[in-house]
Length: 403
Ligand SMILES: *Cc1c(COP(=O)(O)O)cnc(C)c1O
View (tube, rainbow, N blue to C red):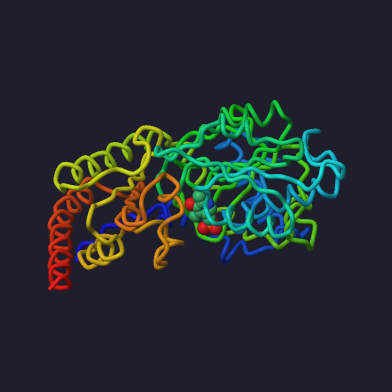
């Protein structure tokens, strides 16, 4: 059977060049990057080269990049690290932060964040931190005016994701960065769905903290990084040895880090690859919109990362559609990978104003560099009759239940 992978937002296949770059660091060059001898030096040099590659992709300095176990850890580090640092040092980041005399710390995030941010924020709330969750419009985008209104004297952190994982919508990060900088508030962005897909420049966007994850752009799973602007007041999440400038303890995952560096270098070299992806995505989306009646796109179609499309098929249960497509070799997802299998509709889709039924009939297709025109054509051939059949079945079962 033909296999078509349209779930790159969940994870993406490792690029062959990335695998080649990683290989020596499993066997011959197995050293601990903290060791003084030759083995250690080889590992250390590889880690530092990867750090430079990641820094180049973000227009950051290598000393401002630390490696983590992935996007989830980086997001946790940003939220817990900033709040803890602000609590232990009144005045917080850049003078605008919380003080002992201004009451409990306050952070601002959005209703459409990844659970790595949302669940961290909820834990902070239980610990007494005030959290504002900014709404989004039907377009899936935050209004910076809402952000300005939400800022309080005790606000220590603004965490707004770069690109949403379910819709692909890109937030007004530059404007948010300007507002945060003016008020002296630390600004974190979960850029896991943006890095490697669209240009991300930490200077232009005035970012203080950024999360990224290797496996979302053809690097290995279990490896991520964090950009930490020099001077940012951030407590560690993980304590131990003096790794990563005392910001993140633990023996470095050298092969993973090398893989992340290589993936970053490939992405730096090919940001125009996104034009090809966007064209394929549009071909798929427009094809489905014209061939399948009762279909609509969720979220803004223009301000989106290139590979992602989120479509709803009226009267179709997304979970059944995903399974029916899987039987034909097509991999996509209902909601995000993390929320599939749960009965509650996606928090992102309800945040853009969809009813529970509309949210439950929405499917995400996410393309990657390995996606071909043939993949899209195959999907355009298979999907319309599958949707028609599912609608027919649900019509029949409705009639039956009415009898
Ligand atoms: C995948 C994802 C994460 C989590 O990254 P992991 O490396 O899988 O832990 C965080 N945020 C967003 C937006 C994501 O898409």
